[in-house]
Amino acid sequence: MTIHNAAQASSSNTDNRLWQKLWKVHSHPRCKDLIWLACKNILPVRANLLHRGVQVAPFCPLCGDKAEFVSHALLQCREVAPVWFASPLSIHIPVQDEIDFSTWLFYMISNCDSSTTSTIFEISWALWGRRNDWVHNSRQLL
Ligand SMILES: [Zn+2]
Image (tube, rainbow, N blue to C red; front, side, top):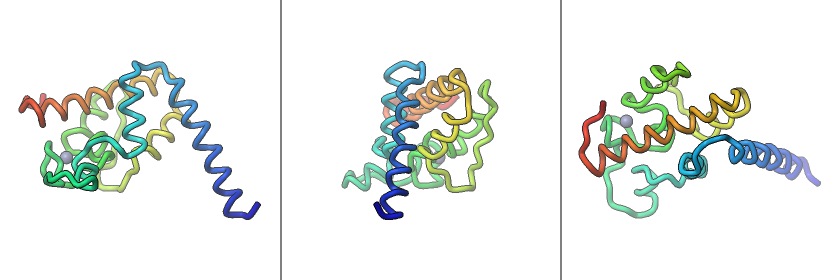
């Protein structure tokens, strides 16, 4: 086994443990599905739709300022980050730093209790639903 292979195996083992933790989180299956799509970077945000050849503007439909990547849609949008801070978790999301959603989530899963992790899943679900209501039903953000 080469050093590169050992690093990959170690990383893979860590990933597997994190995925196992993720699936054990006490949360509704729809929330887990959303988190899985987000972590695999296949959530249909604008950047991913463009990557798949769908003709859409790349900008976030909520703020219109930045490209809508998963981390932007669920964490860093100026319409989203305050929700995390105002939540019972009081999570401060840095909006300027580049954040990878799965890296952030796995850090949170590794460092938070199960109740907090469940709440993170539910907030993510609510934010995605609110975003979709805005995009598909033209509902106002509250
Ligand atoms: Zn935005």
